[in-house]
Length: 181
Image: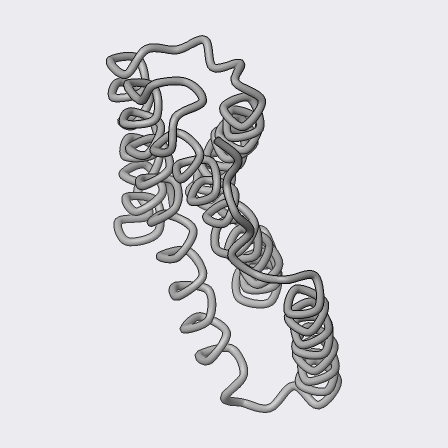
């Protein structure tokens, strides 16, 4: 059974154009804010960073959970096709943009707020690199699921779901406690 497309090519083109326009506006506003460097910019960028990180972490927690159910679904069946759509949209629409914003704003905050100084900051960055590696692993796994080439069991996906939790705990400790200041 072939899965029906949720949107037409025309609707997809409109959505793509809106997304590109939104990105252009955000980049232009970011450049203006960077150029003028108002006093309020740093605090608002921290807000943006936290929102982006939360969005990214939601995806890092949810995608392996989808994989748990997808691994148990009958290959080629309707549930498996639905999981493929859900997984691809989660990666492309939520996780990838949230990761990019987290990195871009986080690096700016590390530079402007701390001058990349502090062992705690470098441990935090190492944790974020770990999250990024896990993100890439999940993205590739979503493509493998879409191609019908998953090699992991539902139990293995449940265990993989713990990876972002451990890395998140390390990052939060470094940000709040700063044990190596």
